[in-house]
Image 1: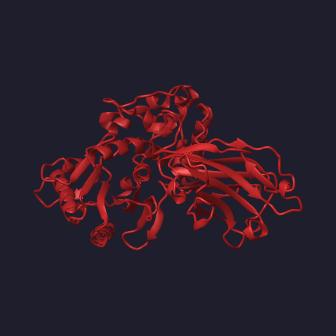
Image 2 (image 1 turned 180 degrees about the vertical axis):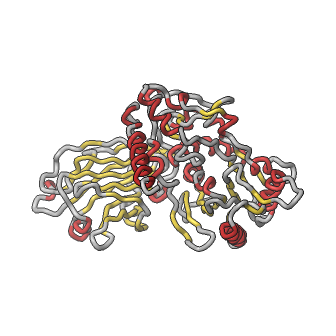
Length: 474
């Protein structure tokens, strides 16, 4: 018995090493990043001489990157000293910039990104810090990812140019611009990904194939285990734990909510696409292992009590948030419930969902049930690695019979009952399964991060399909 720990660790490390080779065994992963523009060395007196710039969409986010000839610190970027590293943004076909994004020092030599709204004459109208994920790989670079509405960018075209400034005796030798004249063009769309990427390859209205993705798996099974669900900004750590996704409150035209267990949380990547496209602010209220239902879950006594507290807190939360008109719900299919003696357990489970939905205030006008996803198996990651080594397509080589992968979803059954008028159901199973098989890799994207949860990357590619269904329903 004492040796079991080391043996298990050795086996786990060996398995992880096998999985990490999966990406190398397959085709090269497609580049999801916006195009990088290389700039000449034309500001010799400035460490901020622009050498490479990139600004465009990746997934649902905008990505801004600078690489300079010299090293610099955030504390060097002081407008008063004539030092700047910025992007000027032109909305639509306007010929004058209406916004500026600049790297600044937030304090203690920590970088931040500021947004400045400009009037037609270049004057500042508004200035604020952008909520962004920022990285400095070295002292010559800066990278930030943020939602388009942070820069007041909606769906459609825009153009931009980068500029830098440094104080020196010869101003011409210390100012730079990329491009030297004109602007780069870009566009905001619901989702920016390679052609036929992920669920797009199984879009029933536009089936497509991309031969470059046939033996691609993104992320690798090992990487997927370490990746969280789609980004969500914390609103409250009190029960029910609440975070926010979608566009900023100041520009949102509708407020929605996502509730359920961890199988609701993994849908956030898809809902983010819909929220950005439709101008929604979303609240996420999820609790692992606790579906939003009135039926007693088949859990231990302590977890059952904790789940009951969360459910009560969710109902109270909705009574305080009358602005939420649309609610999305999802949960693990096949989860057990405790039914009264003599009561059919499956029927009790269905009625539990109906009772919970009826408990939501009438200010909630639509409840949209997202049918649970198919399941994977514990052998799937190794199967994918073997398929890649054999130069086979992992999606088809490791497919699982649909009858085994897809479980009955009591919430979807409940949503189709005639006495649930404000409840609708969306089933995106065709994006993952054919009539006979369910695929672990679709359009070069790994579907599952574990046996039951989908990866955040694949969830994002489901977004346009979900948006199409939502548009028809609402």
